[in-house]
Image (cartoon, rainbow, N blue to C red; front, side, top):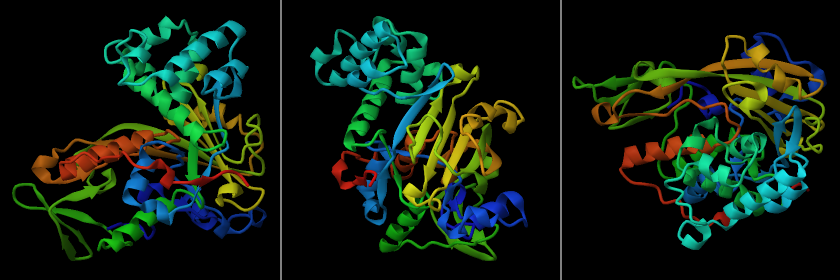
Length: 413
């Protein structure tokens, strides 16, 4: 059941007319931007790691048969005021202008250690128990510089802050391996894939699959309200005088505002351009991560760009997003360092939304509430939340050991 007249809730994709209605009211988009229908602008822009959790879920559920993916061209990082390709292997480390000669050699040794690491092969551990030693200790062993740690931790392992450094290194090394293995999957310049026609395709694909199994979707249901019995247990959802009875309610935070708490705020700029992001090898789809330290901030900033190559804009048009966890009440000023990297813009919109996490006990009220989407431009954090919800709802852990070749993505034509 959805209060909106479109699929996907907060993570929908809008055409140009819908985008203008949302941000500019009664104004109409200029004709110079082309046909409204050719735009699919994600409200929560995120790429998928080729071997990551979401792709495994899509294969496991067979939703892949309703989706077409295409590899993403580039993965970049902002370091010392410039944009660089993220080096992910020992070979790339040696070529990367990100590091000086001696640092390249140290980084190469570290990358080889990570590539060769196998959890069940003690020989590959080099005497380190990654469940005990911290990521900081492993990195110190290889003598890596702060700027190198910055891009490895944030652009490769995709940690959103530096707390991982003082946690057991296993998670950090596994995340680096995931990146490198995803990069190797498709011959593209990045480990990411993205559906043709934008992310709005995802909820629609799940809706189609749900219908196959007898699920019913109700859109355009205003004022959906969860109904509780005298013990505070959810027993149904009411809209316009009709109640759908149920034993469990699964929803996002906006449907049960008194069972969640605010934990932050995301600031995002949505830009329409007529060119790719400069210094990204003319990539038609790209992610650039700006680690917090490089900007003197507490949280990373993310640039995300896609274009007509993924059928989300007319030919010659690019859609770029700049996202971060808001640290002030002025998103325009906060996002400036990211927006400045984009070059000339045809249009820009600013969006902010609060982030919530559930505070309820699902064993008491039978309500299963997701956490709000974060500012990251990949799905890794979201998938962890979804899998945790699945386990709470069903009491089972989802087995994600799937044949990854079932999700193919076409490289650039």
